[in-house]
Length: 257
Image 1 (cartoon, helix red, strand yellow):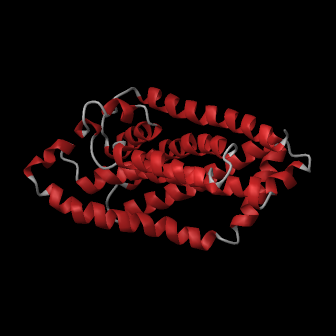
Image 2 (cartoon, helix red, strand yellow):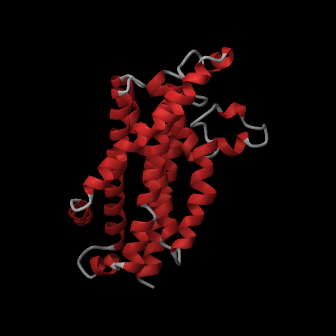
Image 3 (tube, helix red, strand yellow):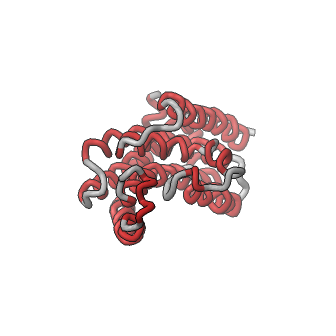
């Protein structure tokens, strides 16, 4: 564990040189999303007589609770992709780390711990913005943070495992184009899953993001979850744990053939 924490420290040292830019993005993105999609489009939806389909909840609050999980997903996926490929292929910092007492398991665990930090920072930034804009209640949105962080890790770990076997960046672009973006749009972030065609609903139900959205929405605005919250948490934990295990296996094969 000590060596894993040293990996976290190394990532933190690098982040010290770039944190200002990422902090601006972390706060600006939710502002733009909530103003445009929530307060703009939301005002039209809320004035529609059919808006009661959201249980009387304002549309901006509905999507904000979903976007909290989606933001964590995007952060986790990004952190598990290009930075990992950089360490393997471009900067070769992973090779350098393994020349020290750090083992592959330490490297993977340390990097995932750092990704958890990054996911937490982005989720906290979103929570602060949504609370300041009066979109979500401060206490409730804080209660949703653990679910958002677990959602982020349910993507960070599997994407890390995939990146460990990716030959170039085009493989990573495909993940975002054909997996992350569709999940962002069709996993309950912007509208209830029940609005999807019947044949597509089961696909949405098996996505990790849907489980994260359900948990965040339950904590932030009091929506009932389709499954028991423990089932949602267990599903997300399964993705994170499996990703951690496969990341170690794949990275070991690539760096220590």
